[in-house]
Length: 366
Ligand SMILES: Nc1ncnc2c1ncn2[C@@H]1O[C@H](COP(=O)(O)OP(=O)(O)OP(=O)(O)O)[C@@H](O)[C@H]1O
Ligand SMILES: CC(=O)N[C@H]1[C@@H]2OC[C@@H](O2)[C@@H](O)[C@@H]1O[C@H](C)C(=O)O
Image (cartoon, rainbow, N blue to C red; front, side):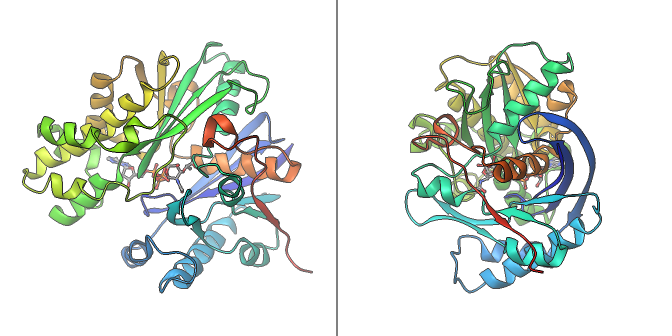
């Protein structure tokens, strides 16, 4: 087993999560320390300004430099890490067009940290015809398998729902021998989750987020807007499928005429309705949906999910896991898989034609 540090800064652009995990890239030996470094207002605004840009774009070098220094500062507080998994900052994602773009040079990070860094996790999957996302699903298999071993989850299929800026869901059979076994994992991006809510409260109230979902809880979702939202072609597509952060550009305009609280309620219900629409494509609805990511702190979001899903909904802590650090842990676990040459995605999770061994390994130069 290796002591790996996984680091993730997602589509919410709020900061970097870092978490230690002990693993052989298959089983989880144990979870370790974790830490968070928030982006300052200026840093977050800089990253927002670079969204949608491809390598060579006007703000990309600055965004990449910021990503490397923020991750290096955080990783330096984990001297126990033998290996680092570095996701980088997604600026653009168009897997069947221009590709996928995570800003940040893992080789530069390896040099700064004097430790091996695994990075560029998504390109190879896209090169082989996959969606390049989501990549946490194989780790969800490991988590379900771990929780089953701890006796906190039954040996039955379960779903993991990550509610970050964008949402993604994995249906997983914890009894499968490996995550890439046929039928072990089925995954997809559900739709927008927190990103449009954050953008709304930033625009209208100058706040970072709808704290606890209080604003949404005071409003009523607009069913007409929701019906139009669900008419987006993403919801008719079969799974697996992935999304760019700004794949729903009409949504802000669609809620523009609503009051602050009704707009927040509508966007919150849109996130939940998107999950329900995605689940309808699964061969079998999960009995239990375990929620991780920042969205599970939003009470109105959790209530909307309970209302719209037939499954029981619970925070992932019910299975003994840390919902704020799951994605960071995923990239530590995936880094060890890359090192061992094990697949990181496959037909059920990204739609790639076969198992894909993604990721690049950079060693510090001597
Ligand atoms: N207490 C809270 N109340 C309401 N919303 C919250 C709360 N805590 C976190 N969030 C929401 O969760 C978001 C952060 O979630 P998370 O860290 O899972 O996203 P991410 O990793 O950036 O995104 P992704 O998973 O799409 O890559 C915040 O931007 C906010 O919208
Ligand atoms: C291209 C990209 O960075 N996608 C992110 C984003 O944020 C959530 C969702 O969209 C998911 O597809 C993915 O992140 C997680 C970590 C994943 O790959 O599993």
